[in-house]
Length: 186
Image (cartoon, rainbow, N blue to C red; front, top):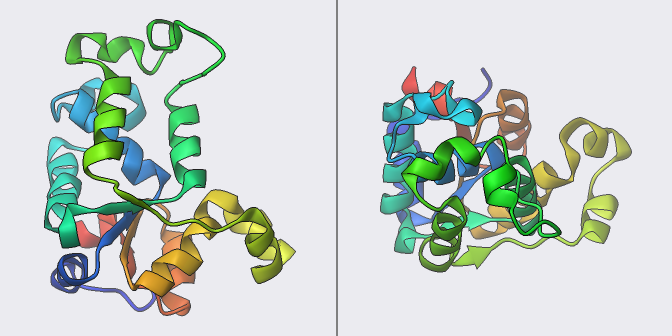
């Protein structure tokens, strides 16, 4: 573990500068909210405990201006992984991820509420900037959704929470305050 950051330091950074979540942490927040915090009942997030969900939600609450920063790439990836398909009218009923949540409420409605009330700001990095700012090796290793965070998180001096320890180590080397949920718990 390179340049690890303590939970206290991370929480302080969230309070003073703001929080950004990678796709998996965003999915945990959205699905956990839809499932009323009962993460073990939802196949896509069953590796996370209810305490994990509550902790990520608490980070979003303490973040400066209660704002969670996302990127268009990560939001698109999250919605794709959740089974939303704008070409199909019955995507919620037919999605294998969303169908088990039907008893917990409307996931799409929760996502829209999240976008309106919590994630009030996007970090935008045009694909052309990613291609010019990063090497082909970095693009292959980390992908567009993850790399779309680097510039914005660094410029806004945000805390970044991810599920990917390799990417977190990369960000730490670049001077970005970042960690994983696992590291915060240990």
